[in-house]
Amino acid sequence: MLMSLLMAIVIGFIAGIIARAIHPGEDPAGFWVTAALGIGGSLLATFLGQALGMYAPGESAGFIMSVIGAIVILAIYTFIRRQRIKHGM
Image 1 (cartoon, rainbow, N blue to C red):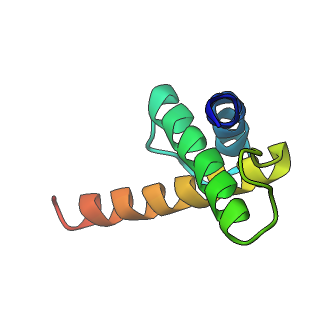
Image 2 (image 1 turned 90 degrees about the vertical axis):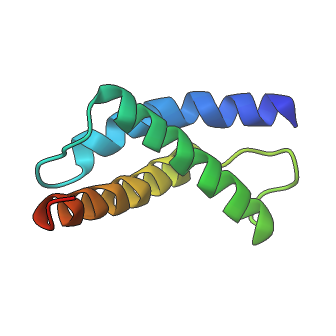
Image 3 (image 1 turned 180 degrees about the vertical axis):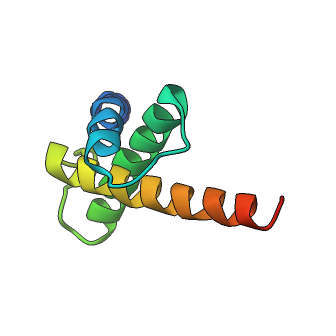
């Protein structure tokens, strides 16, 4: 379980960097925020995949799913950030 979590974090870090390169538009997040969002995306893909039966317990998400999870979280972050800026928050 611990090794799976560590692999998800390492893959997520790389996935976050790739997601930032793939994600269209201007990205308000810095490098470390993007890496953290990538890690979150990888963990999301891992736990969601395990819940849906795509991965066995203790197995981490694949690289492509981690990148997709990172792009989803990065897009949500960008949307929320822009809405807060638009409304002066």
